[in-house]
Amino acid sequence: METGYAALQIFILVTHGIISVLGIVGNGLVIWVAGFRMALTVTTLCYLNLALADFFFSATLPFFMVINTMRGQWPYGWFLCKLFNIIIDTNLYGSIFLIAFIALDRCICVLHPVWAQNHRTLSLAKKVIIVPWILALLLNLPVLIFVTTETDENGDTHCGFNTNFWGNITEEEKLQRTVTSVAIIGINRFVTGFTLPMSIIAICYGLIAAKLRNKSMMKSRHPLRVLIAVAASFFICCFPYQLCLLLATVCVTAVSEEKYNIIFLLTSLTGILAFCNSCLNPVLYVFLGRDFRKRLIHSLPASLERALTEDSAPTSDTTTKSASPPTEAQLQEM
Image: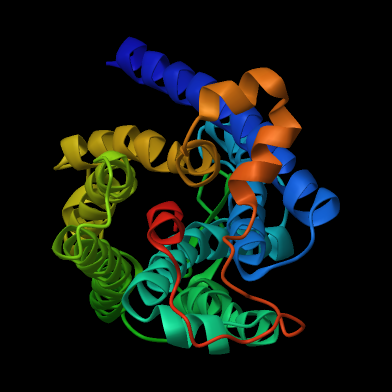
């Protein structure tokens, strides 16, 4: 059993290291191109925020890799216990909400092209893009309230749920309130942090696909394949981990008593898959475009710049407004 646990820890450590490096490099490149080499537009603003969320998420993984090597002990103190958990959760859920935001933006461009041309401005996007971040922060208020450091009977310090939050009550009442709170937080995160954005993404891409098919605007099936790949990869990466987290929070008593070790094991393994999403986003939302191989061979920064370049529909306050809808080719590239 000890050998199996050690092997699992080594596997998690190695995979987290790989994800962290790929996430930092890939998203750092996107930040560099979108933030410094290109003019800021609605599209580049969306990709820049998504890359920032994934970059900071990837950058926090090394700190938690240290925790894994120390078997859960927390060496960073009370303040960083709250701060690191807020950073990693905010960027994790911020990334999900931003993906849903991008799906909504693309859906509006296809379903209401005239409105998008006249009202989809950079100043409006800068205001609206704050909403996913606010939602992510609100979703992590329980971290700020409940998460803290505690020292066990062996003198080891751990970062986790504050069981003494309720004050001077009996141990039985404390346990009951803790279990109830963890379950409510877990259910809320599953519904708000996964089901809601996933539903938005599925609906938006379904509407886009129906619009393109009904209007016969696709010369090929490539745009539809891209949309399906985006939605499917998000679901495949996030759903198993979110489901295991939900089970772990609902069955928190049994998990803490090591009655259902399989839930702990599955949560650790599916977490790796979910964390991979921070590496896949640059590929799915930047690289996965028309003639990517040709662009990549030409120049990696140049290919990123082209892939992130705004479509020809006006998106800034300085562009001239027009009532004419985008052409067939423009809709295909959205």
